[in-house]
View 1: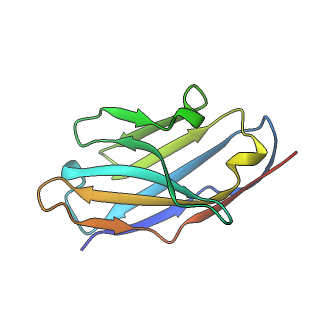
View 2: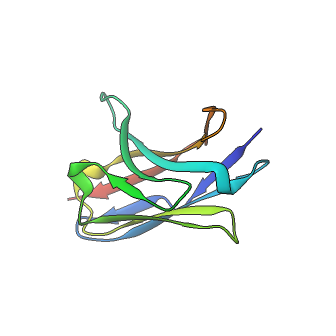
Length: 117
């Protein structure tokens, strides 16, 4: 069983930056695809960025050029560096881990990001 703990959310003005962290425990970090989703009020949960077990990355079009996802295998942690934040980035950011062998998906509790105009 994989446990995920997010941190790093908060309130920031438009144009500012935040770095989210997702610490994973209870599983082999090297076989996990790590993902960040955004849940905005009244909207469907959206995949924002993914870093796969091999290090390849994918981004939603809305965050390309502004967000960077990374992972540190020594710390079993994934990060989401968010720059040039916009009010429409506001939402709960949830970390997800998908075991590439079993395809089981695990979720963290989420961290709130609020971007003021």
